[in-house]
Amino acid sequence: MGSKRNERLKELFLQEITAALRNVNGINANGILTLTGAELSKDSKVLHVYYSVLGTDAERQRKDTILKANAREIRTLLFKRLCLRTVPEIVFKFDETPEKASKLEDIFKQINSEHEKTDENPGSRD
Image (spheres, rainbow, N blue to C red):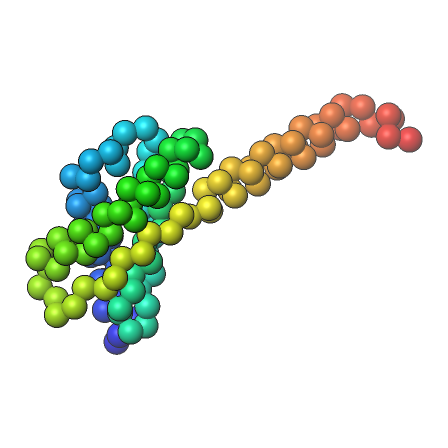
């Protein structure tokens, strides 16, 4: 029963945080920010919000600084907008999954191109 509630809360928090981020100065400049997911602690006191940034490392650092600086303000906004007794502390964490997936895809492409080369020259491996 509690896990369904946590799932609904995570989705609600993500929607509201996304809406709140639209009004944060500097968040839309340089690089694309995507909220990739959220994890709510079992006691519902901490919400880890995962994000990725399409851009350079400097842009990622800038987004990280902006998110962490505005976490308390976003929490206050959620408290005002939602009819909940408590709103969890918001902790933004960088999600490396898209970068890792891109690196894996590059490796697979390289393997595939090497495989195609050996198929074109089957006698060259001897």
